Amino acid sequence: MFKIITGNIKTGFRVYNDFSKIFYLPQNPYYPKGISVFDYLSSIFFSDNLKWFLSKDEKDKIEKVLSKVDLLDKEDICVENLSGGEIQKLNIGLGLLSGADLFLLDEPASNMDFINQLKILKMLKELTKKGITSVVVMHDINLALKYGDTFFGITTEHKILHQDGIKFFTSSNLKSIFDMNFEILESNGNIYVQSVD
Image 1 (tube, rainbow, N blue to C red):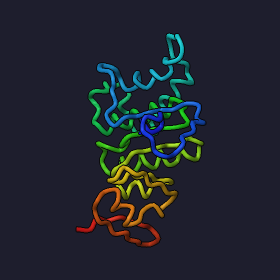
Image 2 (image 1 turned 60 degrees about the vertical axis):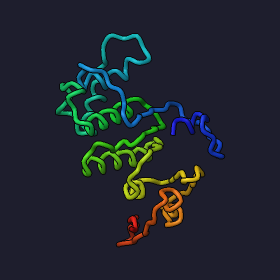
Image 3 (image 1 turned 45 degrees about the vertical axis):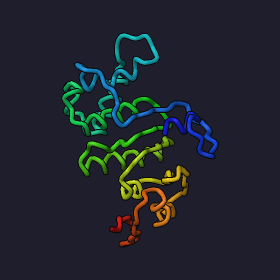
Image 4 (image 1 turned 180 degrees about the vertical axis):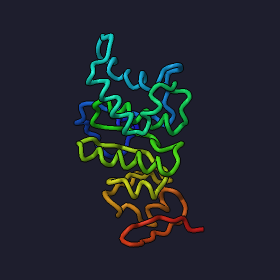
């Protein structure tokens, strides 16, 4: 994804960057050892300035984000003692504090149980109402379908398919991407994708 945006992979699409700040979260992010959850998040406020302490407003922002990602009770725990899913949530919290208006996220809900996956994806969806765009790499087709707005897929022939909305999810599109047969199901106005043996 990052190579496409930087132009290292040619797609046939022209990429315009009108965003003031970009937050990138790889699938396996690096995090320092021996640092607490609170201190890890506070690092975002020290990145651009030479400063020695956090303001009350900055501390309040950290507490608010910790609450939003369900880690408030773990603020004093060392990052390496968190589960994989908790680390993902922590890094998304870092993005929320960064002030970025574009999030580039590679499998942000990986290593999470289903409930936390839904919470994180719902949170990212709600960010669009605040003017934040999220570009997310996902392999769970049904979660992508539920929370996405615009979809891209790379076919087995390295062509890029693009479509706004659920019209992207056709049996032929999915066959060309995954080289498998899929059935598109509808129930109570919702669409689901199921592989066909």
